[in-house]
Length: 388
Image (cartoon, rainbow, N blue to C red; front, side):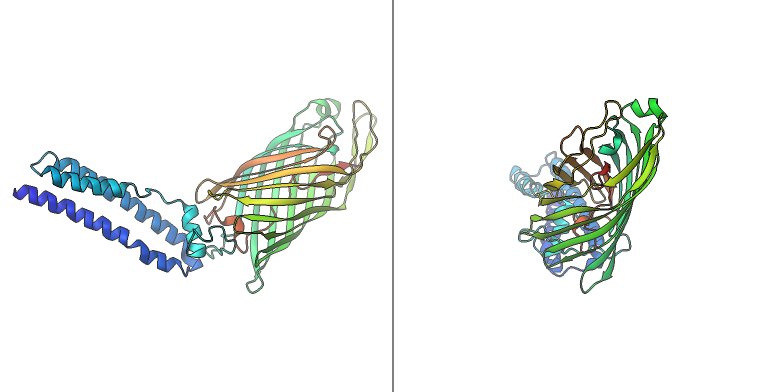
């Protein structure tokens, strides 16, 4: 009987410890009501550790319960502790960081789970993102006989300029190295691939549901010749509610460049950015994945064909596209874009998909922080090039 009483006391002691831990949650919730942005990432990690401790306590309780069944502990005692352990095990064993981040933003994730006023941890890297993925592209500049597939790297950072107004500076760069997806150019003049370097510099602001960004994009590319191009790009939108945002996006051609396609005979070439504009809708889902779709018009483009001869340039054409951002853990998210200017045979077919890394963590809110860049770094999906 002494052994039975000792076992029962041990079980009850562990149960009290676990309940004391769980009952501590309301105090934490009160602290969350007034979050300190400088310590939120640390608090998330602390809560994750506490959750793991809770899971371990449940596992220990189960082990002791199984051991007690091998002693003379009464069936009623075993059944009582077993039911209590069952009820505790029904509590979430893992609290998603999406919920934790949301709690820190608003104090109550059930009321405002998708607020875009989250300020992050305040660290020097909180608004930095690094992207690595795959890129596929076909545009009018391909002479109608080529396409590209290869790798893409990008870095993008937002820098606060005014805490009072929420205006920030965006600086980003992207590199694409792609191989020809068709053999024609390589057989004609030896061109086997393309190197593109994009640079984006601009300003942005998030203020009371209004979101805007304006930037200048530079493009340097080594292809069948070297070209330097430039365009203006912008976006303005408004939050309809905690999950939906609508607005306008546009890319406006600024300057093109001339080069030579060194075939026999040589062909003088002029490349220009394609002006395009669209309306967009962004939706944030329960798992904090964000999807964006857009549709609009693009300026007409040339219809060259190295093998069969040229058609006259087109008039304005319909365009559409989409973007997806899916957080995978605290630091990684799946990110991609696609943009298509019709008709597909002579227009643009551009897309990329890969992983974006947030060094400071918090991928669930990284793209909606106050000083996170509003615009992605320019790439083929936002910088279409015409054969003029």
